[in-house]
Length: 143
Image (cartoon, rainbow, N blue to C red; front, side):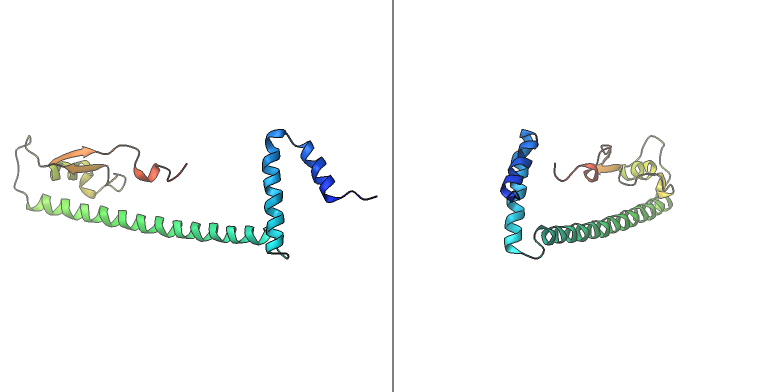
């Protein structure tokens, strides 16, 4: 005599650790509802849709990273141009007298060094300030 699906599910649930049983029941209910909504694909259809969304979001993230890299490169180029113009146009100053912009240009190496982070300093109220080592890019959007 064949056992019913309910009996096999019941005995299968008994074999699971107690803390996993609620998740298993939720999954079984979800699968049953998915099979009612879509008798052909069931959960597989939902999984395929979710995988497509993940792939689309990964592509969107890659495009955003490329845009960000382009914006950073443009920023570095503009800072280098600004620093070169300032160096060419500025009269010689006394060594102890520097402007915040000159301090910024000196800190980023006049834009000549690609290894120097161009966003490491910010000019606030006429004074150059060092940014914290952890930027907004390093912070997770959600936990």
